[in-house]
Amino acid sequence: MRINHLIFNSVFGLIPWKVALYLCSTLIIFSVAQANPVFTGNASVDFHESGVIRFDEPGGKCVGMPLQFLAGTISGWNVKTLYFYYNRSADTMFVGVDFYGIAGDADGDGDPGHTGPVLASLGGIDEPNLGDTESVVLLMDTNMDKKYELAVGVSGTANISSFGTYNFVGREYAPSFGFGKRLNPDPTTLYANPSSSKPDIEFTITHFSKLPGFSFTPSESFSFRTTLFAGSLDDAGIGDALVPGPAGTVITFPSTDGGADSRSAAENDTSSQPALNGSEGRV
Image (cartoon, rainbow, N blue to C red; front, side):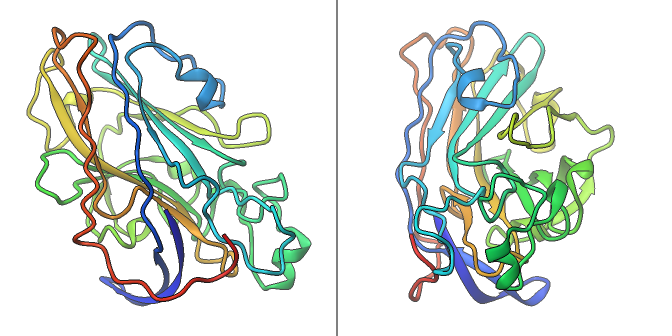
């Protein structure tokens, strides 16, 4: 989903924000579990085992860029695929976020910690280490009440060193500013700070069935609703990603005897999404 700047009245008051411009379809696949993914920072390579659920963003490179950028410039906020793999014996969820570019490289200059000349001329900043208002966050509705309970990632007021799992106390339209108290102990481990050699975000969540809101044992079927945000308020009109949108999608892992023919359920309810006006930049 592409998102563009509008003035949005969040729980934090009137702030510049980027709201959804269009909804992309999904593809989610389930098969029988095997070995764990081995992280290298390249999610499309690492999540190849059977048992992986993937959620594709078929809208492609749909984050808008201001017209001052060269045609074909790809922002590092463009999300390609979300990957999920659950190790039942270890009660650990493996998550990979595959980006078209380098995660956090807002202006697409190949360096996620450098502000290129075009962005600088527009008054924007590409912060290092997902700092300042840059954010990548996976929201999770663990009790399936259509309200997100958890935020996993980096908030819009911190940096990569604070990557973790937090209670979510905000609104799904402004996810990077809805981080509440961090879980203690925090079950999240980030593989690496995104870079040219490790462009994607990969992490694990241990004791997954014990997260607030869940009520399953590792051998049972379970579902959660999720959506992912990636973007910044400081990048001078570069779009953000919200995949698949505020309403999210439902990921379902069958029980251990679910069999290879089981499928997860995808939910794309657009009824709660706002009406949109115009666009900014170039698709």
